[in-house]
Image (cartoon, rainbow, N blue to C red; front, side):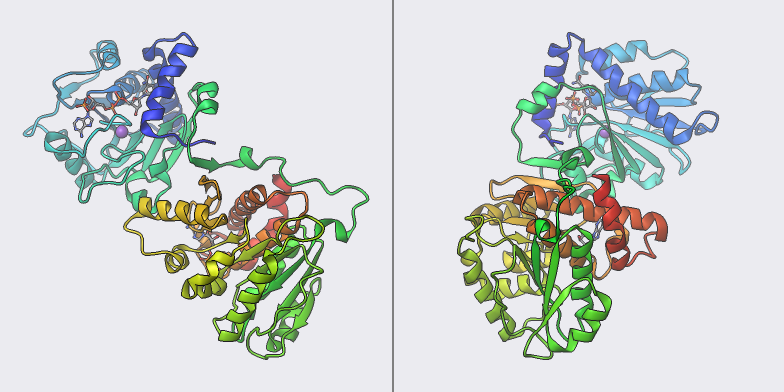
Length: 509
Ligand SMILES: NC(=O)C1=CN([C@@H]2O[C@H](COP(=O)(O)OP(=O)(O)OC[C@H]3O[C@@H](n4cnc5c(N)ncnc54)[C@H](OP(=O)(O)O)[C@@H]3O)[C@@H](O)[C@H]2O)[C@@H](O)CC1
Ligand SMILES: Nc1ncnc2c1ncn2[C@@H]1O[C@H](COP(=O)(O)OP(=O)(O)O)[C@@H](O)[C@H]1O
Ligand SMILES: [K+]
């Protein structure tokens, strides 16, 4: 699914109106209908809130609010409307103002006449949407501050008022803190950034049948990976396939005290359809590894506590390095040798050996940035924000971090998986794909090691192109976390639960 800018979103509305020969008021009615359905779904018939207040601004966001007020009134909700005064109002605002039944109390907001809001009021925030042109000030800022102070249940229409859809927020700007955001058409970039979580709350997108042609024709670097984006991408396992069909992966992982990382990554790799897996581990991990992962083969290093040797790479279709690796100088030398060896094109494919680089291998790269130029094309790097910072520089805010991410992926022609709640995959061509699956239960040690294993398996798969493999792996990893959390609860989830649910998650896609 594409994510469009605020300007593109307005053009999309216009294209929909022109292409479907409808009026803008009809499109607004669609949006209001979807909002009504959201209320039905959320509150159900018969248990409507005692008091619903609609705060309406002067543009089409306010028009949505006025249309929704009429529909909620028709559905027997007790509604009140508070109107933000302005010099001018949009045409569809007027249309819906005139259609508002006289029985609905509607009052103009003033500095001395702020609407009464209690913690039990359900407030629909329809002050400003994608037409926000500057930070809130004056009466608009006052009413939002009043709303936020009331700690009411706020449902934002399209986007919390005061929040820019696709650009950084000026410091100390006033923004509605919504509990829910119900958006029309496509998700907004702002919803996916950690810095906006306190404003956006739980968000969802309602389908209002916007022009698919316009969306297809509009270029954007931002994408949202939902189920449809990965459906059918895992190649089928042919009837006469054998273990050689699905690739032989090599995992370089583990050190004393961190063998669990190697075990988790190996388990995830095996559960993600790899044909064969060999792990190269330090000597101290032999018993641990062989007992916990009998399906994997195991090579032990000459060193007991960390990895100091690079095995012969000729048997393998992909290599993963990093989980639990430690940062010993000998392991750094192994990483360097691996990068040098992997750069040479493989006889079979003519391409360089696929690599997945994680955890301490990333930290080593960060400390020895001269190695970055050795990264073979389409190498997969899976940093969390701190690891990414070590590879680049501290980000000023989430937008700046996305810029750094794009620059890094294009400069080094690699696939960078910036992990988080909406893990962002950056491609060598500068696209950013935000993942839709996963939950806060996965914020637990070892979840990232599991992701490395999944990606290693999918990069070993000869029929999966690099980008598709990584996008699918990130999606399936999050989905496995969601399936696991449904059983364990988020607090009870451990990384091993994600491993156990990768099979079902991959089967779903
Ligand atoms: N197009 C369609 O058919 C559909 C659109 N839809 C809905 O429309 C919304 C977009 O509507 P919109 O473009 O009218 O902009 P909106 O967000 O209401 O604000 C613009 C008004 O606010 C004003 N203003 C801006 N910033 C301000 C500030 N800081 N402080 C004070 N004033 C400020 C601005 O004034 P100006 O910038 O010109 O001074 C203008 O008057 C979209 O989010 C969705 O909800 C859906 O119904 C689907 C169909
Ligand atoms: N709040 C969250 N929502 C969704 N996914 C999350 C959340 N927190 C963490 N994750 C996922 O869990 C994984 C954590 O990886 P990482 O930070 O490397 O952990 P570790 O180093 O302990 O293995 C990432 O894939 C990340 O996307
Ligand atoms: K709004």
